[in-house]
Image (cartoon, rainbow, N blue to C red; front, side, top):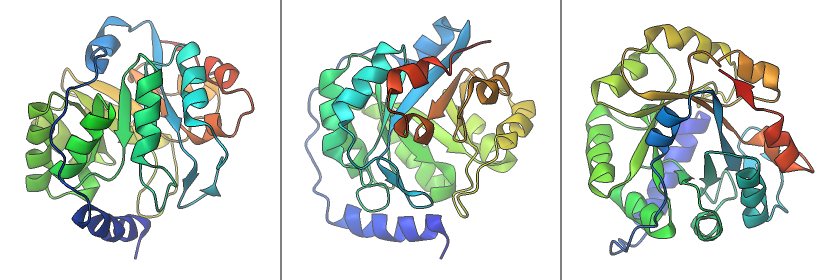
Amino acid sequence: MTFLEEILAQKAVEVAEMPLEQVAEKRKTYSFYEFLKENTDKVQLIAEVKRASPSKGEINMDVNPVAQAKSYEAAGAGMISVLTDPIFFKGSIEDLREVARNVGIPVLCKDFIISEKQLIRARNAGAAVVLLIISALTEEKLITLFKQALALDLEVLVEVHDQKELAVAQKIGAKLIGVNNRNLHTFEVDIAISEILSSEFSSDACFISESGFKTADDVNRVSKEYNAVLVGEALMREATPEAAANSLKVTR
């Protein structure tokens, strides 16, 4: 099995045992899409709280998610991404809940979402944005979850990996489109994926380049075509995450 197949098999088990929560009051924050549209002078940062990954193993198991998120917010991050997968990324929905309680900016629920149960749980925990990964879903399931998320007043970051998936994301009207430089089957990373796919952009969406960023020079590679970058591992390995986040600021 590839990494993605293994993760999805486990996720199906996890979701089957997950209760269907009642929809609670939504946490108030700003629209991330509108934030990106209004702040185009520099590449914005989505900074991630990430303890581990399937390919790298443990990254920072001792992290205090709230302290990490506050450092990101102090550095001017536009949104915090929180890994909530417990098996492969050692995260939890409680990490997201605590971060959302302690920062004012939007929080992204980063997980392999396959069910409306996860959407409701994410909203109830304080997420303003949820991730839908096209390669993890059939097109029919993607559209269903996309509509359900919007009905819950959630913004949706639709993640793509190639031209075909990008075409689907643009066709369904996604306002936030993430190009993941990481192949989810092999977990190999190449920022060139974002560079190549940018020639296919044809909507008024905001585009986010995800994975592989360690320096401002890396960010500069995508600065003209992308509104934001998502950075996790590079920030999680630094002793001073605020300074590390500041070092990634790049003018567009």
